[in-house]
Image (cartoon, rainbow, N blue to C red):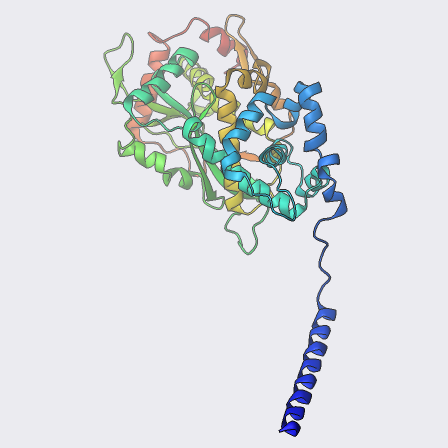
Length: 431
C-alpha cells in the first residue's frame, strides 16, 4: 500500500513540474501587458486639458471657451445634464471613471476642430482607445437627447404651413416648404468595401440629403447612402421624394396666392443638381435665360430663398471642422457623427444666445435690398470643406407639368408677387 501511494505521489510531482514548465514557456512567449494606467494618464486631473485649460477658460475667458467648444458655458452645462444619464460610468475600486463633462468636452473638441484622436489623447491625457470609445458613444447620445426637440420633421398640414409662412415672410417665396440640398460627405476608404463608396469625384463618401427651413435649421436629414450611387438616382430613391409624390407627408393641398385665381402647390427649392418636378422647383438653366428679364428675376427670387440651405451647410462646416477633411471612421460611425452635428447646429440656431455666437450676421450671405448689394458670408473664407455638392448626371429632361408650373411662378414674381428691389438686385448681381 505504501509503495502504491509513493508511486502516485511521484507521478503527481512529475505532472505538476511538467505543467509549471509549460506555463512558464507560454508566459515567456506572451506579449508584455501594458501597465494598468500610464503615469502620464494618471496625472489627468492635475494636467489634463479638461481639468485645467477648460476650467480656467470658464472662469477667465468665456469667449475663448466658446471658440474651443462652439458654445458658451451655460449651454455646455445644459448639454452635460442632457447626456449624463446616457454616458455616465460607474467608479470602480481600482479607478475613478471619466466624468460626463469631460467626455462631452473631448467629443465637442473633436467635432469642432477635427483634431485627431492621438492628439486629443495627449492633450486630455486619456488613452487613445478610450478616446475612440468616448467619441462614438457621446455623438450617439447627443443625437438621442437633441433630436426629439431640435430635429423635427413636420407631421401635419399646420406644421408645414408654419414653415411655408416663415419662408414667405423672411424670403418672399410663397408656398415654399424648404430648401433642398444634397452633399457627399467625404470619408476615408472603408476596409474591404471595394468601390461601394467611390463617387464621381474619385473620392469615397456617404450621402447627406437635407431640407432646411427659413431659419437655417434642418427639418429633414437622410445620411448614409453610399457615394457610388448617382446623385439623380439617390434623389429618385429618397423617401422624401416618394412621400411628396404619393401625398403621404401631410403637405397642404395647392392654394391660391395673394391676388391670383390659380392654385399653386407647396414646393421645395433646389439647384441644378436635382431634377425639376411639381414638388421641387429649380432655377432656369443659364442657357435658357439669356436676356429674358422675367427668368432672371425668377432665378433671383429662388436663389434668395434657397440661400438658406447654402448658409446652413456653410456655417455647419465652418463651425464643425471635422467636416473639412475626409472623416476617418467607418461609415456607420460617420453617420452618427453627422447626425450629432446636425442636431447641435439646430440647437445652437434655435437658442437666441447660441445663435448670435454660433452664426452672427457677418457669418452668413446677406444682401442689402435697398442698396442692391450682396455680401458673401465669412464662412466662405474658410478652406474648402469635404461636403461635395450634387451634380445632375441625368440631363435636363423635365416633365411638361413641372415646366409649366415654373413658368407660372415666374409670371407671379414678375407681376402681382414682385418685390420693389428685385430689378436692382438682378442688375447689380448680373443674374
